[in-house]
Length: 494
Image (tube, rainbow, N blue to C red):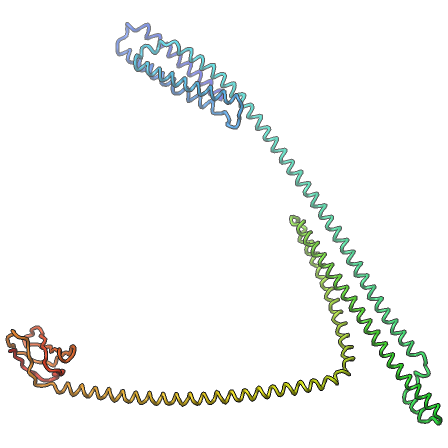
């Protein structure tokens, strides 16, 4: 930019010096040169003035387009104002020069103010160059600052990314630690459940052993069967022996009943306890599953942007499946226990079923009576419908016979009408035809061409002459139709 401005200023100074020389030469040689030379010099001066007035502002505008619009300093504002002032002053000077050259071209060269304006313009050019350099330096500084800011922003972004990665790693570690703790808690709970189950089994075995010991308190009496006791009673000679043996038998029966009652009660209590334990385990497992689902949801919401989310979900799904399987096993055990309870209830309700059989028989008889009544009602309905169908069939047969009779009558009437038409057509012969008045008689020949148009009163004959003349229509006075098949009549008009 500086080199270009220097070249422009040097060219401008050279043009000015040449212009001065030319301006001094006409002043000295005015009386010598002729009018033609004066005219040529005036044209040259006008061209120089136009060149000086047009190209100089363009070059200056090109040189000072470097000022950036982003700078809002006072120097830029001053330089733009100076540039506008110079541009308008040069344009005014150019217009004045052109005006003077048009008016008196010889006096334009002797203008001394032109040198002063040129000097001022050169000074202003130097000032503008200096301001332009300052602005360029400011631009470079601002570019450097922008680059620094970009680098700082990039570094901050990298630092934030590193912090996010650290936080995510810490979250992942926390999640893994929580999962381990959860797994350990689940395993401990399962171990406790297994221990409780083993304890319950041991208690049931201990109770069975205690029952066996109670049954075997009197081994001599227990070893003796009922048959032996009965034989003793039969073989006894005294009443005391019979009473003793009878008391032993009664006591034996009473003890067996009590033992059975006690055994059944203990079994029922054990089954109920196992059921309650299974229900409590099921509820506990459901709560744990609900808690695990909530934790899974929270962990999924917190770890959406992590790549390890799929693995965690798979592990959680596997755990959930395992828990569901454990729940299913517990439910199956619960069902088995319920089935056992039902079987025991069935054993207790067998003696009640005999009394309920009579009620069932009554219900069965009642249902049979209701079914019989329904069948009777249905038979009545079927008989009524059959009667209605028979009546409808008779009505249909009557309608068909009426229709056949009507068809026969219609055929007879058609045949009668045809015979009447044939008679009417055969009766038409040797009739006098009345033609229209005012027409001379013309010999005509009938050629079996009759057209029946309208009623008989206005019927017409289509007559064709021997000379191939146009057909004529004749009105008939009779109320009959004409039929000429092979007859040839000669017709004369009155």
